[in-house]
Image 1 (cartoon, rainbow, N blue to C red):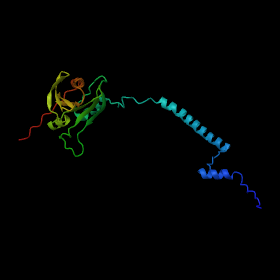
Image 2 (spheres, rainbow, N blue to C red):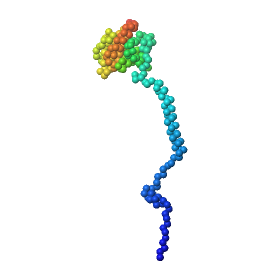
Image 3 (cartoon, rainbow, N blue to C red):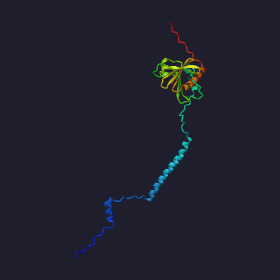
Image 4 (cartoon, rainbow, N blue to C red):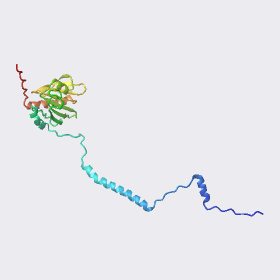
Length: 234
């Protein structure tokens, strides 16, 4: 006779756990955020949004009150006539101050003494001259240079060694026309004791307009008298 023994019952859930462990490892644990912590997190996000809105509201009127930059860029306030009067005594002549009716905008007007350190007087770079820069109506550039001490080397330097290509009448005077062939050109006039050079990449029509105003300014100023060179003693 065999004695029947009843099998030992397995703990509840042991079979499912072992099956789960065998199938895919331990089950993932899903974190649970306490309600108080979640409330504090939401409060922080809302506070950041409110602070950002307040900052934008504070700076928006400042931005709106400041006008946007002008597309024409910065325009310096240059009074060519006043600068010319100030340079008259040191120049020894009245520098030209062309009246173009605000069509040409000056961006500098200065007297260059031509006495930079290491530059001998009388050389190309050592020639004292009146200089004015103009922005043309078509947004190009023409530089004006005037001196009573022009020499061939200085003239070549100012015109970038451009050859003479003809003449052009402006203001009732014949200007010498020089062209580099690369867009840069110059108009040269010797009149009433000084030499005036206009140089730049503007169109010839704009050159002629400025040259006409230069001649009118020259005619309104006293002529420059050149003292004769002293005769050397025998």
